[in-house]
Image 1 (spheres, rainbow, N blue to C red):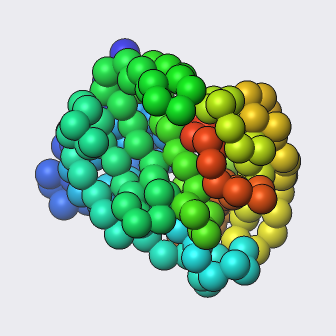
Image 2: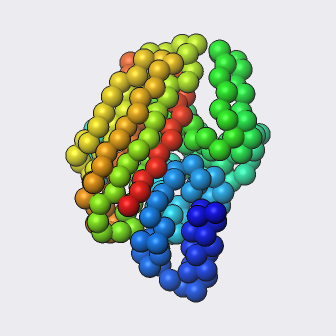
Amino acid sequence: MKKFTIASVLGLLLFSGMSINAWAETAMSWNLAKDVIFAKERVSPSSPWAFMENTSGVNNPDNYVLLPSFTADVCGGKPATCWQDVPSGAHVTVHKETYNYSGNGSFTVPAGNVIFHPGMNSQTIIRWTSPITGTVNILGRINSIHTACGDGVAWSLNQGNTVLQSGSLAKGTGAVFSLGDVPVTVASTLYFVLDKKTNYSCDSSTIDMLITN
């Protein structure tokens, strides 16, 4: 019920011309999957989330650019919304129905989950831009889900240029990330960076991420 109330308030305020900053303190939480599953544009001015890639080989926010392609509602012939760089294989996808992959091995992604993959020579990045000044708590989990090949993935949670947490996952494993009282200001950024290791084969991973104030 709380989520419905937040969404309703957001819609009314946006309709009236108020900015995201005006209602952010009421919202108090940002859930990655729930916030983006019904996205209709590559970058929404009413959402703090955006999806990016880094092809430079140097992990610095100055090198991050938006994933160039966006498709709402149907992606790859499946009910899904996705942001991707088709030639490189980098993508962020939210499936609206349970997705069963079969081909080189198999895995299942439940409806509403976020799945992402690094590019052949690029990192895939989830950006959260703070609409508030204060402190936030971050809780999430990343899972490497394609076990048929590859060597797992590397990840980091960054605030601007600063690495807050990082890890390396063997294929088929997962990790929880959690931080409390992270100071933020309006327009400051958090980045979750997914990277390949020695190769990018079978690097499909899922992520849950919740940010609260």
